[in-house]
Length: 120
Image (tube, rainbow, N blue to C red; front, side):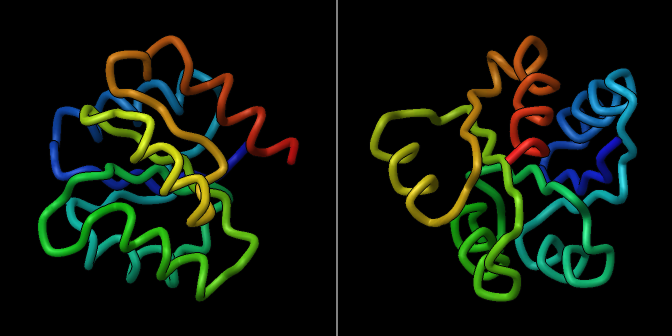
């Protein structure tokens, strides 16, 4: 079981991700709705995995990822976006994300990706 911090500016998406996480037997350690709150929550909660929306107010998911990796180099992050393209994927993986998911595929792929990331 993994403790997961869910970060997305959409309440609907946070709820959906939380339901998927719980259905997979994992725990939602917390939620954040923007990049600034995400880093604060990460430092406080120290989750096993953080899911990050790529495009958010105040700080992008990519900026938060870099800050988290600076704080904790072995952090496990999954970047999730509706704005997927190869360039974004390459950048966030290079920045330290363990996986990259498109929101359109999240329902069928998130639990599999969580298991893969936890196995690393």
